[in-house]
Length: 246
Ligand code: ADP
Image 1: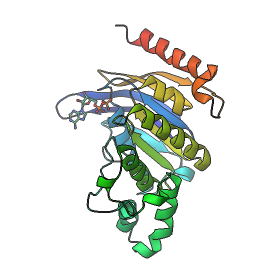
Image 2 (image 1 turned 120 degrees about the horizontal axis):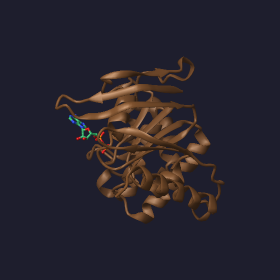
Image 3 (image 1 turned 60 degrees about the vertical axis):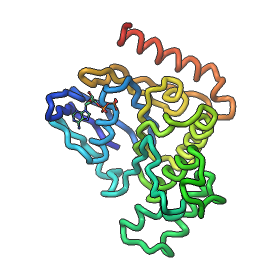
Image 4 (image 1 turned 180 degrees about the vertical axis):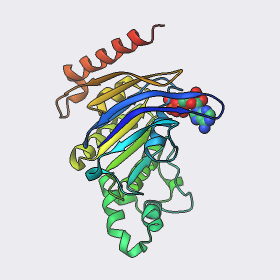
């Protein structure tokens, strides 16, 4: 889908946030960017979204799968919903910005809310929803434009563990069903191993990709207990120990 070619990003205060990032991402991959705070994960997502420009290097998009402007979904750690609008109107926002009327958009909005399990909460405002439900609305808002590429910046970090496991299961199932490309930032080894089929391990100061790990974990309800998943957690842990000695 795109290649990161020798990407570096230096901020005005001279921080070298990213240094020589190279990676080829294929359509339909679920890639976790894993690393400690400050290793440049969010900066890399912002470059992919076009919110920042690299200082050197480039992102080379495959023309056939290059997302049109506005066709990249972005989910942040906070749900960032409009407090005065119900779930329907929060999810409507990106379509409204594209010029659709609410009547035109409504079937798409309802389908996106149903996909995240919120069909029955469409007319609730954020204050009436739990943290997990607010994050589901935020994911529906990103999915409503049917993005080829979904960028997610630690979306489950603020949720309790029970809710986080449920959202991880649902996101993984959605990805399998939709086949879109997901780049997911996390600093949880378990989350990266569970969700993604490829984990790019990043190291800080300056931000670099130190390892590119892949796993084939069998799908199904026993995934979280499967030996393949636990082996992948072990492989990532050992890699981190090797590249970031205490
Ligand atoms: P991560 O998402 O892995 O925590 P970030 O991409 O947020 O890392 O930040 C990487 C490095 O770049 C950090 O040292 C951070 O302080 C610095 N940084 C991020 N954004 C800016 C900015 N706008 N101006 C200056 N420094 C920044």
